[in-house]
Length: 193
Image 1 (cartoon, rainbow, N blue to C red):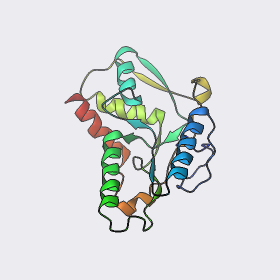
Image 2: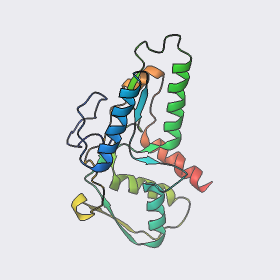
Image 3: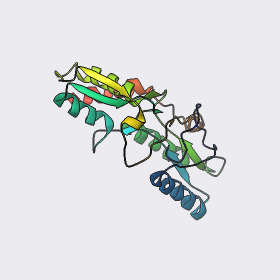
Image 4: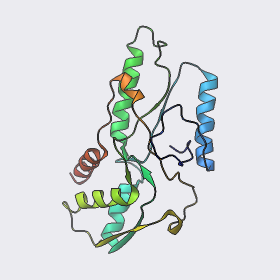
């Protein structure tokens, strides 16, 4: 998602003009361009707002902070599609299987695709949903999740304000993104299992 400038108000299709606004996005775009230049038979899968069992991510950070603090301040003016790494891995496996099992993989399948959780939300709403689910498994200290603007929470990396990617094209592989809320709920269940 960082390859786009975040100025749109409709989901970005794969062929939308890119325009990264920070170093991270520029490095992602440079990687895409290098892959395309090196081999026309390629698959690039863009994604956004990843969370999963391993490593740091927004949801596990929110749960950790909710155990320690009674108030959290979370950005409400950035919009995106939360994506569970397990769903992304399954989608990628479907894409690879289709490519390997197609007699003529060059028949319109090579290129760039988007895969994210279906639907979109804000960081603030994602925090509320995740913490509501987590509260079913443990008592949390948090009592208020205060919505704030991006300018009130400066970070070293500039984030696009709108990171919603259109995932229609990836359906050619038989891949249908799950609703982000469904995936978050299952992730939380498994996190506590």
